[in-house]
Length: 266
Ligand SMILES: NC(=O)c1ccc[n+]([C@@H]2O[C@H](COP(=O)([O-])OP(=O)(O)OC[C@H]3O[C@@H](n4cnc5c(N)ncnc54)[C@H](O)[C@@H]3O)[C@@H](O)[C@H]2O)c1
Figure 1 (spheres, rainbow, N blue to C red):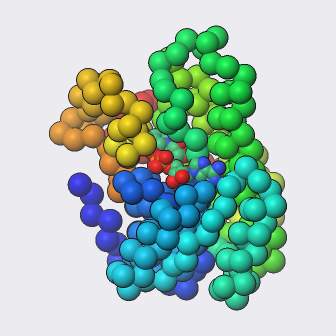
Figure 2: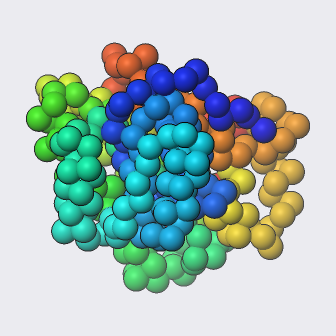
Figure 3: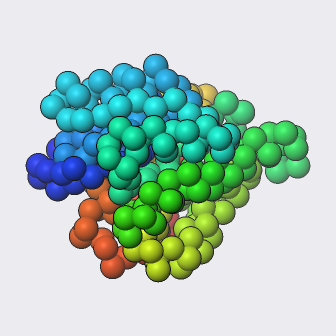
């Protein structure tokens, strides 16, 4: 497994909001822990408040600074209240936003494209795309006021690859690439950088639950990667998310980092 510990303090004092950070074995949690180790003040935002509280406590126990924030990202009012409470806690500043929350499991997989219901389609786009737009609207005024910001959106390699049987999800993750490119062009004038990360098939709890009846996929995905010895894990996304949050990537915007062990050609 990849080491999540980086050089100390490279995000010292920066305020980071990570949506969907409240999982147990999840990409959001791995990013939160890494940001905490790098000295960022981390707002762990999730619809799952006990989960967000647990991850914030993990960061504090490791010597970092973090708070949990309860928020359903499909509600613009809740997003604005969450941004306000984070800014109030830490002197009006928010430098980093990771748009990681998404609807992922919960509806099963491998259904033909014309058998998903309109409600299922709408729920997927509502959380994954509209929710991301709402959170960004809520955080934007703080970034604009400080003339600097880093926004990192979680897409998916499934958009580049095309995955049969999961069309509402892959469509939502493709929308995020368009969103990232357009938003980056629009917000560059304010010093705000907008980039995306597209993880490959990653062994988070949500993925393990979704694919529990299809475990032959784990070996199949190892074979598809350029590295065959293990599957991708949430911690593999922590380094790329750190890079896109750090000043080292300040001349990058509108880009997507495909982090999938080489499984998918870009
Ligand atoms: N695991 C993978 O294989 C994989 C691959 C590619 C992309 N991704 C993307 O990475 C991100 C994290 O995935 P994960 O596997 O860690 O899944 P996860 O389900 O553990 O993470 C999603 C988090 O979002 C939260 N959330 C859901 N709806 C919300 C809402 N309305 N408001 C606030 N929070 C909400 C959940 O409580 C959860 O903590 C997602 O954007 C996912 O699409 C995952």
